Length: 465
Image (cartoon, rainbow, N blue to C red; front, side, top):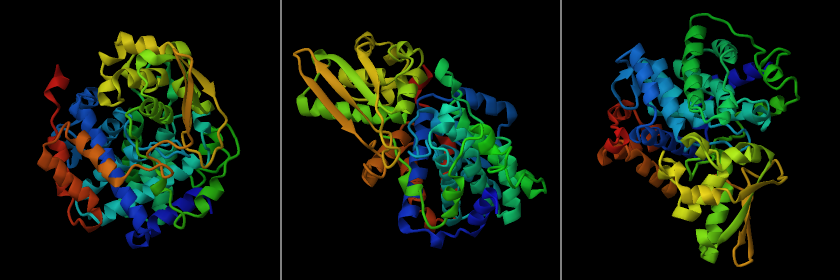
C-alpha cells in the first residue's frame, strides 16, 4: 500500500463519531480562530490585491468569500479566503511540521461544502479533521527540512490536506481520493524567497493550496488519474522536494486514526512568525518581573534554533530595519524593540507608520541573535532572551515551548477573545456572535447558511485612507 493509498483509506473511512471529543473541540476552535484572522485582515484593509483579482474572474458565485456580498465561484473563494486568513500571520501552526494548517484546510472545506449545498456541520467538521491530519503528517515526515530546501510547508504540504478535506466533502471513493492526491502533488508549491524582500507571496500559499485542492478533486471526480506513488515514489513528492533525503513518512501515516495531531496545532498570540513568540514572551516576563523599560536596556541577545535564526534574525542588517510590514513580522529585533517601546505586540505593531518609528528601530539595532541547539521534540518553537541593562545587570529567560501550543496552551476563553477582537474588525457584534455560535456548534449544525455573514464583512473606514 502506497502512502497516498493509506491516506485515502483514512479519509474515506473517517467518521465524526470515531473522533475523540478533544479532537472535535480543537478542530472547531481552529476553524473559529482562522476565520477571525481572515476577518481581521479584511477589516484592516489587507488583501485588496486578491479582491481585485477575484473581481476580474467573477462577481458572484455559490461560495462565501470574505467581504464579497455576492460570493464567488468555489476556486476563487478558496483563494481569497485562504490568502486573507494567512495575511496577518496570526493563524495557527503545527510545531513539528511547521505547517500553517487551517489557512488552507478551512477555506477549501467551506468552499466545497457551500458549493455542494447539502453538507451538514458534522460532515464539515469531520472533513476538517481529515485535512488537518494529512497536512500535519506530511510536514512531520520531513521536520524542518522543507525550509532548508527553500519550500514553504504550508503550501507544499497544505495542498494535500486541503485536497483530502474536499475529497471527503465531495464523497469521493477511495480510488478517486488516491487520484486526487496524486493530481495535487503536481500542484504543490510555495517558495520562501519572499524573505529576500518582503514580497506578499507567502499569504498566497494557503490560498493557492485551497484553490488547487478543489481543482484536483473535481478532476478526479470526472476520471482523471494521479500517480499512486505521488508521495513515496522515486520521482515523487518527497524524493523531488527533499532531494532524496530519508523521511519517516511510513511511520507518520501508519497510525492515522489512532493518534491525532489536531489538538497539537498551536494558536498564535502574536500576529508574527511563530519563531518570534517565545523570545517575545520571555522578554515580556522579564519586563513584568523586573519593571524594565526601553531606557534600561543596553543590548539584547535573542535565542532560537537554527531554523528560527535563519527566519527571524538573519540577515541581521535586514532584520534591524524592516523594509515592509511583512519584513517586520519576520524580524525578532523589531518585535522585541516594539514590545519594550510600546508594551505590546499586536496588529497595530505592523502598521506602515509603526515599522519606521525611530525609537523602535534604534533599539532594534541593539539586538543580536544566537543559535541554540534545542531537542527536536517535544520542544516547539523554543527561544528566549538575555538582556544587558545599562546599570550592569544580565537578565535571562527562556521558554522551551511557545505559548499557544499544547505544552503551553492558550485557554478556550483566550482563543475566543482573540476571535472576537479579530472578527470585530469587520463584523458587527451580532454577526460575529452568530458566526461564533455556528462554528463552536458545528457538530450539531444542520445548515451552513450562517457562514454567509462572512460575505458582508466590511473594511474599517480608517483602513481605506
